[in-house]
Length: 175
Ligand code: SF4
Image (cartoon, rainbow, N blue to C red; front, side):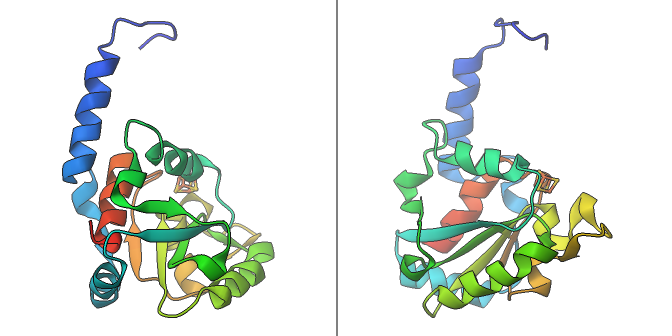
């Protein structure tokens, strides 16, 4: 598609994506992998429609952040499912971590994890968070998120589609 080409039926596309997100049936939504299925189910039972997450960018390229931002847009509207980002880890139900964990961010990530009250959940969002992705072996990378803190849920993709993110977070929110 050329830049400035407005012939694409954008409104219909957005409505379709929003409907898919609401049903959790968007492309990629079925590829969520639970590293701790029991923990996720327990979190869903506990949260009952309210999930507050502290987001930690442990060293991402910012692509995953763009998709996280878009899940709170009117198109995907994650807040209708009780999903919100929380400024303080002390008020959060868990962590939403993106990127490979860089050497400089491993300490802050551990400290943030320690600040979240128990029981807590850790979600690794994106291929870099799962296994370092394209940054595997880079000199400034300490490892994947699971190498630093215990991960309960992984959302694959580079970056994951916003509808897949919403579908995955709904399994934790219990909505
Ligand atoms: S998974 Fe892809 S989009 Fe996300 S931080 Fe890694 S390279 Fe960037």
